[in-house]
Length: 457
Image 1 (cartoon, rainbow, N blue to C red):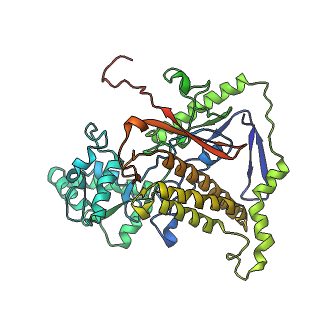
Image 2: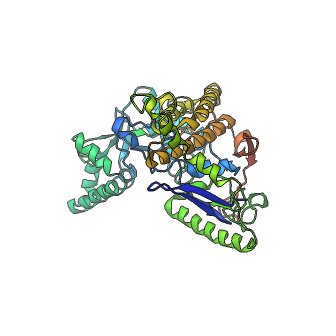
Image 3: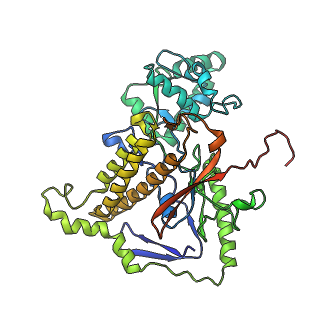
């Protein structure tokens, strides 16, 4: 049963100890687990919030909570280098994405998409299958991929007044200024006016999340009115650890909820936490670990720095410690090259994943040698420790699921096809805090919504 949490201040040398009957673990998804396409000063340019370090998944896993669908990831297609949103151009301007020769690659490759349902049933081709068609064009040498904004603008001008076109332009720019102001800077730096020149598109590096087009996360108790008995254990949105709740990106197998749905989950979790506390009024939370020992563990990177910083003339290069930034680069390189990152066109196989497991084990051993020269770097050290846990969970799930369920997001090259007979299931995992071992299993998939449209339920 959960009893509390321990954290540290990034402004002063203080440790905070929280004791609680119920805890809501909502630290977002995970970015920068994989090496981003951006380099140098642009390393921080990513699609999802940069402060999402996988802490939701890592902290839950460390205390033995069951995870689900951690093999799932999201690889959005964005404007190249700026990570600007493309949806406004598709939806508002009816713009087309093409290969370098002006061909609509989704239409051109329609046949290869039919093998992966629900292409023949969906009104809109799913994001992963759009990526799947795009990656074929890129691998076949028909890149770069382009958003044909000038043609779309010309077509709009045929049916709309100049004032209406101007209004649409303002809407698009508002999207960029709200969501990704850096894209406007990239266009300005390249002398691109999107209404006059085409712009390149590119799939990003992978992200781990439980909202939007991702559904990885923690296995939680479902709603009492529709969830089958084996999917509920008393309190909606409670994990398999008693008293530990989550919402938003933390809830696995519950994608496409976006901001409003995540907000709704937070309200659901909050109400159930109150009920849990009332039902357990006599429980007095007591932390399992010794606070002094926990404090020593939290500040270990600081001790590493002060004990060894004078042993080299360049403090960032030292045989006794590793900086959080270099630790992150090591993690990103492993994930990128062995766990289906951009370096391999999102492809991996069983042998590559074995290598990844070995290298991640070595990296986990080295995590105790991270250094922190100030409180901000101490935060970075623990963020990257959480990224390591998240990356390992992701790798283990991909290793366990022997099929390709999300073409365009990742491929098991040794199992390139969809396998509903064996793998139309949830994949769940649990790290045992006592034995320090992982266990993975299949959990049967149950249709809560009847297949027959309009059928009574």
